[in-house]
Amino acid sequence: MTDVLVPAAGIDPQRWPGVAATPVYGMRGRIAAALFRRAAASLPLRVAYPDGTVTGERGPVMRLHRPEAFAARLGDAGLIGFGEAYQAGDWDCDDLVALLTVFAGRMATLIPPRLQWLRRFHGLRAPRSERNTPHGSRRNIQRHYDLSNDLFALFLDDSMTYSSALFDDPAEDLTVAQHRKIDRLLDGARVRAGSRVLEIGTGWGELAIRAARRGADVVSVTLSTEQRDLARRRAEQAGVADRIEVRLCDYREIEPVTLGFDAIVSVEMIEAVGEAYWPVYADVLHRHLAPDGRVALQMITMAHDRMLATRDSYTWIHKYVFPGGLIPSVPAVQAVAARAGLTVTGRHDFGADYARTLHRWRAAFQERRDQVTALGFDATFLRTWNFYLAYCEAGFAAGYLDVCQLTMGRTR
Image (cartoon, rainbow, N blue to C red):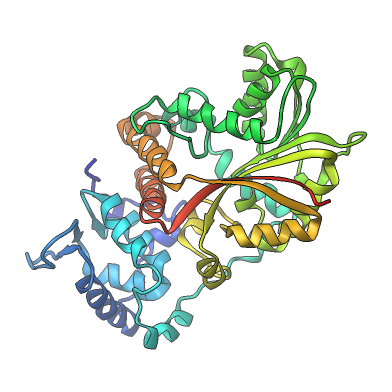
């Protein structure tokens, strides 16, 4: 999957102000260029410059088309600038995942310890508007999930499941692997005929449909109008609409039911909650759970020390893909859950399966570029989402990120 170069001149400054505007190549840029050369020399990659110079002896080739623009962005905004340089076409790579996997594997040590103080010059803070208040959460979720149902349908499988699958065989059908993931969560939450199920984060309805087919009654909440509408239509088409209620509702505003829900299921939702609201989220789980009920969560995770080191960072992913979130560590979630009165009863990690899932999504996205464009998305969007999907796949392939399913019950 070779990535097509897009000239910076073709970027819409209204839609992509941070990409269209290249910072001046000054002192910061020169320092960034020197640090990048030093870091690249210690990694298994090659860097090709416009004059024909190629540094390094092995690994994927990073082609710098505009070295000064690349360094200026890097010096101005650190890793955000690194991503924006790709969006702008300042650099390219024929095997983007391989290149980003190299960087992800050395993320904590790319900058020498004695130079870590330089981070403060480009350590951007998240805008206050992206805080996950009830109003902020709606805006953050809508920025991503309300882009277009048709867009997501172009690269997701037929189940419209936007989270890691669980593979029995790397080559198996993606929908089969997605159903295995869902069924494992439902089994962990002990969902059966007659169960009252609360789903926090609807997606496009596949988990609710599979729970309803078991004979459960499901209340599912989402902040995305696009997801709500399609999930309702899919429930009707599946013949289980009488067992599923999809609400446009913040998790903090869920109405209680008598005796609580027998099962609460939430898939890759806690990452969007934000650290400041993790205790609130855990309290919601506890408050709505029946005395003998079970919680089943699927969540993207990172090592606890990396979470602590990056918890205040404002990243490229925040700026362009998922505003307001933070990937937790398992110990952090366990601690928050324990304070809310919940005890972890089971855990299953399967990060390699997320790398496989993302590989499938990115391949489908690349194959359907023309259809993405036909939906009204421009060339910079194509590069942005290609980088996003490759960036995430690399994180899981390198082990920098993981994904796990946790089951919980009330602490006795």
